Image (spheres, rainbow, N blue to C red):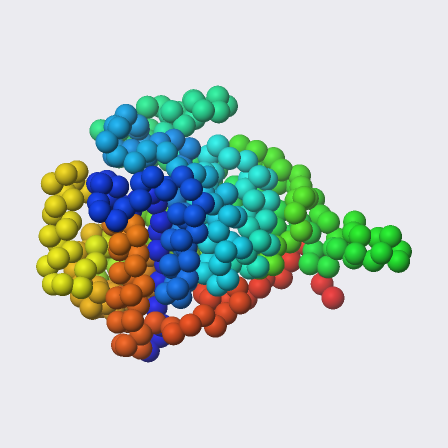
Length: 396
């Protein structure tokens, strides 16, 4: 049996809005390095493929595309790239994938940040670019004005045009970052003390990218990262984002609510790959699930119901509450539709992450569906991706 890929998405005290009130939750530690180091080490203890770290340029919100001004849920977060850099030296195998905005963050800064993370983690860095459509986030920077959107605006031609423009910009952003990672050839550093030559200037390259939103000349100030191209991921819910992922990502997270829907989404993604002329390896498609796990049958559902009475959970992804064995049944059934694996969003941290490590992973191993230990040296290799050739290097 082919082994599943398993990732966890880490955010605050968990993905349930009332998670911070749970016994065992640690809301007082969310802004400490030790909290995040402990969570990522727990994922590594289970030999998970990677962790993703959420981020945004504004406070969390219970409504899409606007701030809710609530004060009864976790608000505020540490910078995802900086968390990743802090936890990387404290771990040895698990992939670390921070999120950044492509709408307001300069691709040059993102490129050197993720490249630096790849050096610090010795080839375990990934990246999840995402657009920022909130008007208040645009106001942080003052370089553009975005309209205030409400749910009533969803589906309107103006909103779809706005999102399409942000996705086009995001595609350019990813392309620039990828070119910057290649702007140093692998052997550009000579480090020859005898001749006094540290660098071969002929092996640094201008990328000369010119798009609608920015022009970037390059080269990077950071040498080519250990993986050459760190793993690029995307979260996608619709055809335009499937096309964005097909153009620039290696792994895509999707949100099916059934086996049939998973098969349908995979079909749309493969069509997007053909439409965009994608070359190389097809996207690895991982399904997202919010999970509540307890060993006793019915306990997780009761816990979720109790949390929902405090503050109901609304999610783009399917919500699962059950035992590790029941979740293993679902994952294996869903994987038969063609999903390469899953990204699990723990409902409550650290409870549900520990349950993944101590319950789900052993169950999947018992069924021959998950690895016993890490085998690959880099995150790309874990997804079967070779270290790519440098686009600017002269052919031998």
